[in-house]
Length: 110
Figure 1 (cartoon, rainbow, N blue to C red):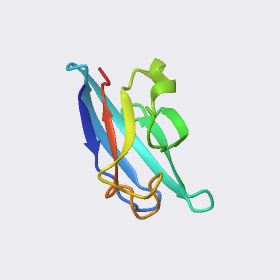
Figure 2 (cartoon, one colour):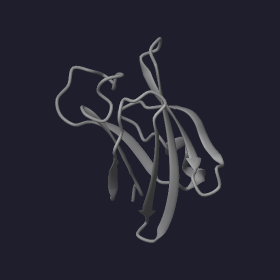
Figure 3 (cartoon, one colour):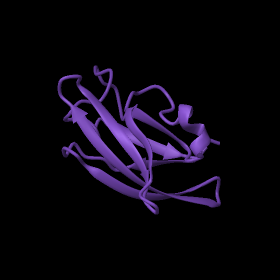
Figure 4 (cartoon, rainbow, N blue to C red):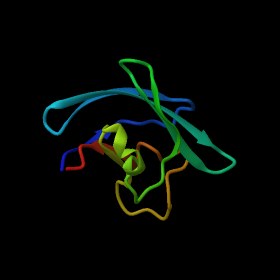
């Protein structure tokens, strides 16, 4: 199983562009738009195809412990998980810990 850490920050309305090679041969080019909702204490992401600008996923909650892209397998863009870097009392990342105490791993899931 190949996973890559996607560098994230807690900057409001942060956007990350990254390219990955999945399954050892297939390249994807992703634009990731992140937002933090203070009221719900929750990070959400929009996933776009950076080559075409097409929105693939909107409003995906960044919830630890699950394959975030599991329900979007038909998009064939891999799998992703939010994981804690070390022991933490938090159940999920907040507006100060995403990218430091919690990281996003994205890969082929094979």
